[in-house]
Image 1 (cartoon, helix red, strand yellow):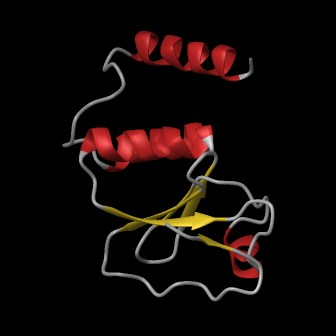
Image 2: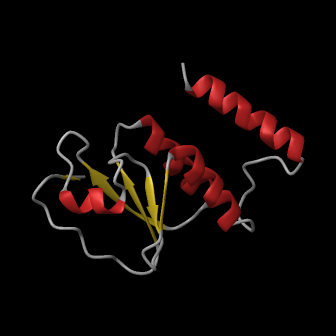
Length: 118
């Protein structure tokens, strides 16, 4: 599995599935990958060399961070926690990963924020 670097061309899309821009060893990108797998969502993974990012990737996410979810129509969502929530909201018919109870849902989000900063 190669990682796209500076000077590489943006890969052509392979069908109408979601595209996840990732990096194999990035724990933040792993969050999004885990949600995609747990919900059984078909996706295409494009790995980015974060130390030598391709120019086209910075056009997709000016922050230059992964994960990034790109919809077939070109819309993008980034930041790991936001990507995970987006997938939960976008595919409610798939396995539920968040509690239905509003208080419990946000209590879990607090834990992710507190534990994610350590």
